[in-house]
Amino acid sequence: MTNDRAAATAAAVPIAPADLSPSVRRTIFLYLGILIVLLAFGGPSGGLFDIPISFFLKNRLHLQAHEVADFRLVAAIPLYLSFVFGFIRDIWSPFGRKDRGFMLLFGSITAFLYVVFAFTPMSYVTLVVAVVLLTTSFLFVASAQNGLTSVIGQQHAMTGQISAVWNVFLSIPTVGALLIGGVLSGILEQETPDQAVRILFLVGAAIMTAVALYGLWKPKAVYDNISVENGSAAHPIKDLKRLGRHWPIYPAMLIWLLWNFAPGSTTPLQYYLQNTLHATDAQWGQWNAIFAASFIPTFIVFGILCRKYHLKTLLLWGTVAAVPQMVPLLLIHSMTGALIAAVPIGLMGGVATGAYLDLIIRSSPHGLQGTMFMMSGSLYFAVSRFGDVLGTHLYDHYGGFTVCVIAITIVYALILPTLLLVPKRLTATADGQMTDFGLGADESPGRLDVAMQADNS
Image (cartoon, rainbow, N blue to C red):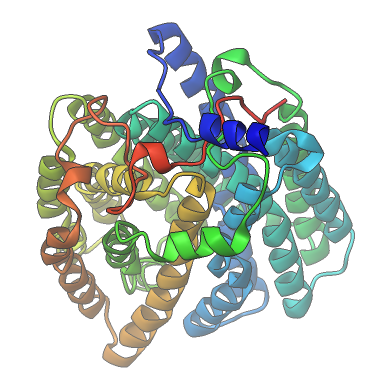
């Protein structure tokens, strides 16, 4: 009994972030960057697969805009439950390897599923089943990457830099996937439907095999600088209650909801550019690629500014710049104009996105970073899919894209008053100035049940 009490006392020690050298930080950023790139290419809901699948539905199965939106809504069911996968990540350690165990196990399972469906005759129903099962397996791997990223950002007081790195590395493959996805869609048009899907899914299998192999690597610079925050014993009910009582997550999630709702920015925009401005499949991919690439300069700017200015300042001015983000779409009358307009549209959203993700990481309760990060993913997919359905109905009912731009701008403007709900202590510092982000109002570092030895053996 005495030994147990002593052990408990020793465990209740606040995490003291190490003073990481620039070389260690670069190694961490590179490790996370490679993993983010692989998952961005391998995800069944990503640009490499989403665009060819959307064109398969539109061109091969001849679905209308609202029918494609409905497909996305149904196929994204696992994505709405992303927080469940994050919670499992927080309380389970496959093979005793924590995040690397998830990469190894579910990277292999996802690759296997890609191969199975590559040789399965495709129909609307089969495609729905394939995307749902692939997404379910993939989310276990994504939860490991997201949780690991958030933990490192919190424990070493570099949430802004992690946000910038995460967004930049995610944007690079997103741009590549969108460009390749649009071109790949055109190439696959020359194949039979089953052959087209087979090629696409075998590419996914190869990528996820690489992810599984990546899980075997354990760089010391990354894993020797992580401290486990909830010990070896899992307490699911207590953790869920702690999450529910953690006030900082609510304004952060509300801001994320408003930012990603964007009614009309996906399917209606695709149909507007193709049916009204006569864009090709490749040009639709190019528009999305330019849009995504244009975020990168302002992501980098955010990565620099986050070390000099308080997050409160970056949240405010990032939001002000982002509110009229979609207005340039009202000024275009050709596909060339649309491709040009994609540049300022992307640039206007970079600082806001970086700041919102920074806030999400800072708001995560200790030991539940995977749950919080994946909860933001659940929210993203739920509101973006429902926003897409709403935008599609607005587009079909009013016969134009203008109403979608107006709706998006109004929703974005609502973020400004929502910023007032964010706890001041979370936004009053720049990167490197505060480390107890994951504490609730009724917690202190001494009350955290933490272990100082990593569970990533």
